Amino acid sequence: MELGVQYFRTFARYNFWANNRLYNAAGELPDEARRLDRKVFFGSLHSTLNHLLAGDRIWMGRILGRDHGVTSLDQILYEEFDELRAERLTEDLGIVTYADGLKPEDMLTVLEYRTFSAGDGKTPLPLVLGHMFNHQTHHRGQAHAMLSQAGLAAPSLDLIYFLREAEDAASTA
Image (cartoon, rainbow, N blue to C red):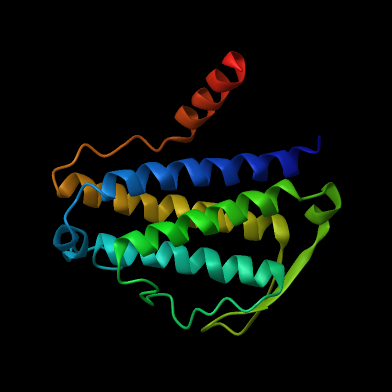
């Protein structure tokens, strides 16, 4: 199979796995601890998780040619954690489904889009996907630190642990 396609399918699954682990840990905190300003870019854990969802919705909307409904990068899409978590799951499943449908020729696509502040953009699809997954990793790192600040044992989110778990699951299937 084409390496580029498989690469992004792996990252879609890793993204799903890491977000699930992050939300499981965040769910152990009371709401006030998730909303506490921890002096990171988006302030609180709750705001950072909303930003991650907003970012993915924006990029997937651009990729799929649909309205993403996001009006700003710091928009609070969901005030309630349980609803935010459910929507994160839905988005992650959509990303996996999209990645599963990628074909080698899709790696030649150049995505044209409009940004909130920089105007029109034009970027090869593999770089857009790379940015989307890298953006997730960046802000999950901030969320991970906030979990530690809150006194939780934050879960490992390293890609290599995901790969080992996937390999172990495949070998026992």
